[in-house]
Figure 1 (cartoon, rainbow, N blue to C red):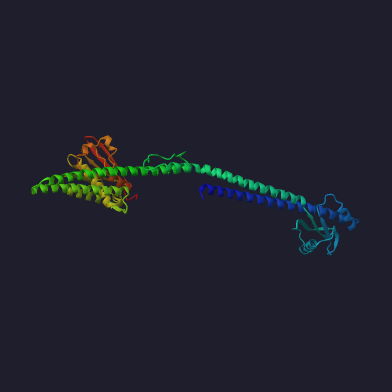
Figure 2: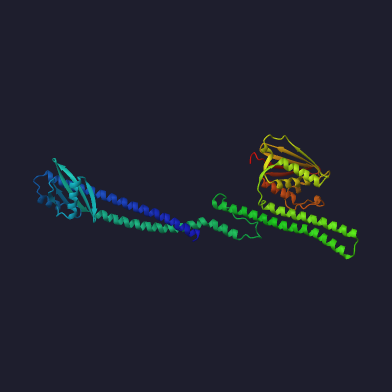
Length: 457
């Protein structure tokens, strides 16, 4: 069952329940009102007859019966019985039936006024005190007019209830179609989107209601998918290019080597060159693997407390050991007394990779192969500033430095693949931090990394 049918059925069922409950309540309330009104009228009429009979001694039972039978405003099949305290019936408009006799006995026994409804006949039993003597009265009649009114009311309620239920079903169907139309439109729009037109977006309507929120969520998802597809295409294109170049060079070296017999020194030199190319390929593959892992938010990584002091010291020591020509000046602001202020929640290896990348870039692109690293411990976080005096980055290139495989024209002669900074940004964001770059041509570049400390984590 589709949602439209389900909504229609539920709406109709709710309306039907309300209408039926209202109709039953109205009918029952009308029945109670009719019965109370009729018994009150019956009691008043019979009570007047009884009092007139008791007040006038000259009225014998036969005369009273004659007068009673000739009353104009009598109720249909009205009967009246009067008995005294000696259990003797002193007046009966018609021969008493079994029900009247039993009610009279009950009245003697209980001594309280009561009403009874049996076979469309209304009965009322009560006591009238007169001149110190109690008289027991049972009066009955049919409320034909009231019953006819109830039958008419029942018919009207039934017709109106059925008509309203049908109307509710039709209007429910219409409104469910209107309510679901925006969803149907969203589905139609989404159905037209495929890998070739991921730039398309779903119409967001007024941007406020639930359907608009659904469209907004779809558009955000489409944006992420489009970005993922774009990255995949870029990844494949750049990876293909980066692999093709060294492999082509290696193939050319081997082909040249095989053209004729070479000396041992020439073979060794070629093998050294091939080994260097292979090392570069291994570095490229490792970088691509790290980039793929970063875009999957580094699965299977568990974060712990990490001391930024240890990270920076280890990074500098290892980088200088690997590249002795690098000159890295590491300075720390005043150390806080609380240990939490020099710690962050993260992964030691990933953070070390980040700062290795940044320090290596700073030294690699600096004329003096030097950089200055300053660590500032603040109340809510830790700021790391890495400054070099290199050629700087053009403003047009600065906005692209965190894109995978991006390399400016000025740096293409320097070894690298343009993967490092994209990994840095992804890793810092994973650690709930920020990274920014400020650069001026001919002056140098400053990279600022901000990480929350363990005090707020």
